[in-house]
Image (cartoon, rainbow, N blue to C red; front, side):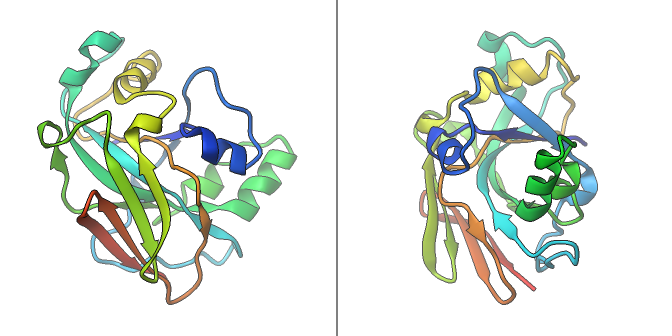
Length: 203
């Protein structure tokens, strides 16, 4: 299983981090060991003092494909979930400043929270999916798929130029503005619309 993560896919989030808006999808990968086991708390890793939450809609691939045309991309997924791309922001900034890859800031064990259930895409308006994140019962992020710079289908078509997409692969589609730091004892809840998709305790 591969875990793809799209960066800078919401203009306001891109601006809040002081980055340029991309002209094509920007992505990186996480290993499968990044998946946070269902029901387990998230443990802040020892190597970072600045772990950020980034809530994202997640596509689950259900059909193998390569060089997929955008007009056919919709045939390669049927469910939408929700996840958090946990990021060691201090480590990321240090790596970027040195011109080094920053996978260790994004792909560490437990850095990919994923909802235990997914929603059939036919039960959603794919161009108007509201999603949000609460921290300690306060809403800290809210997003909508209509604000994505690159649509689900465009992302799938683009990734398939470089990688064969296989059944079970996950695509984190980017985070909206409002990312922030977590600390021990924080409680995070993710929602698609009014439906609670996950709850995770930070330790």
